[in-house]
Length: 55
Image (cartoon, rainbow, N blue to C red; front, side, top):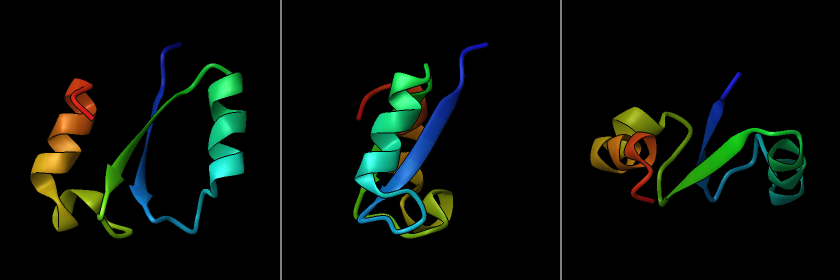
């Protein structure tokens, strides 16, 4: 099942090493630079771009 993980950068909940593990397990990982924990509130346009694959 295709799955997308959207991360904030810098992000503490999922460090870069863990993001690599997720990618290795088949997850697509996209990062929104400069966003905080609530990505969709901190950078709505960046969040939407991540969903569309533009980041």
